[in-house]
Image 1 (cartoon, one colour):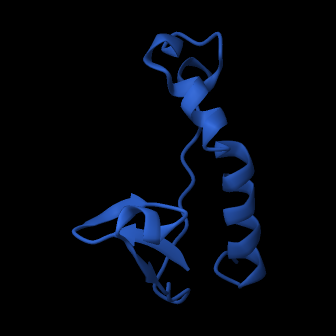
Image 2 (cartoon, rainbow, N blue to C red):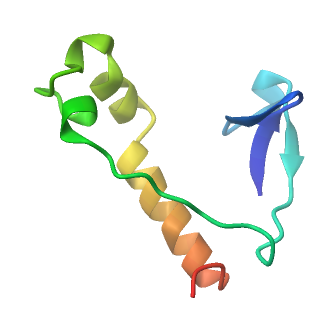
Image 3 (cartoon, helix red, strand yellow):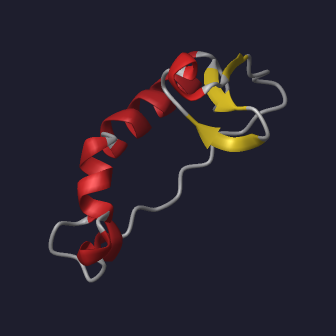
Length: 81
């Protein structure tokens, strides 16, 4: 299950009660997990776009750890085959 904000289906939050969101159940038969390539220029602390704050945001949101967890869960449930 993921948490989304009403009216903004693309926005995902960890704690729906903090953002006014709701809990959504995902049907693995109708859902795909897409992981975009994380570019060094955007995500690395010495990357070209570091001044935009994306490396700090990525670290704060634990992008790599959470991406790994999402992939593991998708594989565990048979969503990726």
